[in-house]
Image (cartoon, rainbow, N blue to C red):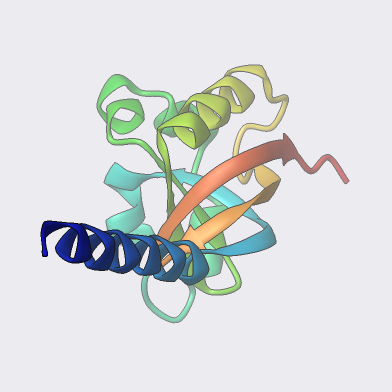
Amino acid sequence: MTRKIFFAGLVLLLAGVAVAARDSKSVKLTGYIIDNACAAGRATGDNAAEKVKNHTVKCAQMPKCAESGYALYADGKLYKLDAEGNKKAAELLKNTKFEKGMQVAVEGSVDGDKLTVKTISEVTS
């Protein structure tokens, strides 16, 4: 009896893992980096793309803004970066020559509004 319950639990666990893995999908997105603190006021409304594009790199690097983490605004949607993505975005912001509107290409997986970053690079053209 205990063995049957164990195997039934194992099957349910594996099914749950399979469903969770299926929910996140691989993506390649191009968009603009913005800190989460400023995203709430800028990444909404009719001209959200323009407001995000005009957000300054200097602001995104301010301590409170940097501590809030970063997001990618792409295709009219805001994706919050995971911890690794935040580190990579901070490094790009530190080294960019742009003063505002840093555009990036990101490969990773999306689950809802969370973006797990595999690679991120600055788009220079």
